[in-house]
Length: 321
Length: 254
Figure 1 (cartoon, chains in turn blue, yellow):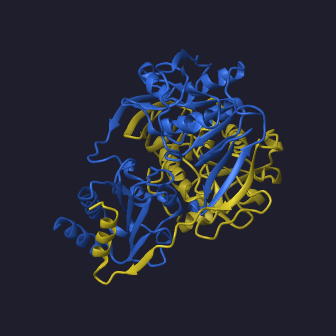
Figure 2 (cartoon, one colour):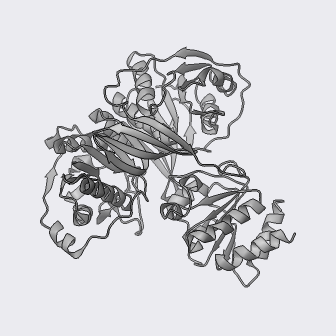
Figure 3 (spheres, chains in turn red, cyan):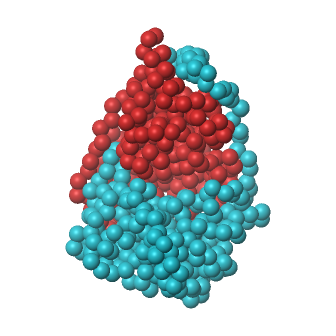
């Protein structure tokens, strides 16, 4: 089946469409003649200009879902359009908390398979997907073989977001389908954890700490170094699980994907789950006392040494400049 | 308070992993163990059942070759029983097929709550629990970093991009938990001995009325990723910090 029309599931915050949404719109432009967005929330009308600028000619508006989680209503609306014969030939969904909910529910509702953790798409008569496996050391290529639109769940930063200079997209409503009991979970309170400095997934420098720091108090070294370099502080899953730092700091498979100019991995061994999130960094510096740590396999500069000595010395050297 | 925990038995992540020639799916022919990510869900379920003052924890798993070693680990932690779906026809099953199998098995246990990890450590698709919820017609709350039962509803702190949300859902519901939601207990000797005699019901896809066959997707090739050029790895002789400064200077970052 030729790819004529692609729908991009367009997530947004109060600041507008997410960067990943714009990345997917950009990628979709190269793959199909028609690119449209599916959006929800109170800001859709205001976001139509940006969605249009990045290539969407239409926005299918699921409407303001209030305090509901997006998974059930957004999936049901897309499913209803597919069932009515008004669906696209492919649906691109960001790998995010809500994106995965939408993909899972849409897949089950339409009885369509889903391809996840995609980092590359190759166009043509059909789409071929690329997925990193084993910490990114190998790339698996895959495709859908059945009927019906493919559901593609794509990781952040897989594509660059580039404006197409398009006009504002036309907004039209997309009706929510029958939800039964699937939409009964509600958000009671939203908590925003304040961060200072550049955002983790946008910073030019990311300094991350891992288990090698020894104890939670030593994470202050990571924060201090990040601040000196005007960068963001990140973390491995191990120390997030251990409760040393909030989840919003996590880099890796289940956390953020980062591609800074330089990534400093301090006391991080380089587990598969971490590598997937940072391997695309332009430069990687690693400090680890274990010379066999996998992180050295991807490091441009590796210091086999004690983070408790190297980090304070590095901070001192930068301060004295 | 009856809780079902979806658990996956996976090849030991510490051992070398490989893809099967031909199908390019993960080689699962060797010994399988309980996915570490699932220990958190098992612990969470045990604590919720204990706090509710009754009910039991049932494990539901799909695995090749009648594998039960991972299930025994979770039974040793305190789960009461397990349902294992094992069928050669399910080899290489995709996430949706897996969800259909799990959903059908879960129905048999009639749970008040279904708990799963946010994603497995081997396939990390991260969609299966939500597919299960949709197939069962249940609400779902994913990425829970805290879970509590309040009467006939479940209260969850759900991770978000900017922090977390307090989410409440009526029961029954599907909740996926992150690593770190609770500290999993180590099975006691008594628990390990008791686990040997706990019931494990083994079913086939046909027992559950699940059609097997084409999954609607295929792997077309597997290629080596472009390797990063080998870097300079040096042992710190007291000059490590200065080397990093020089490297950053080269990038005009300091």
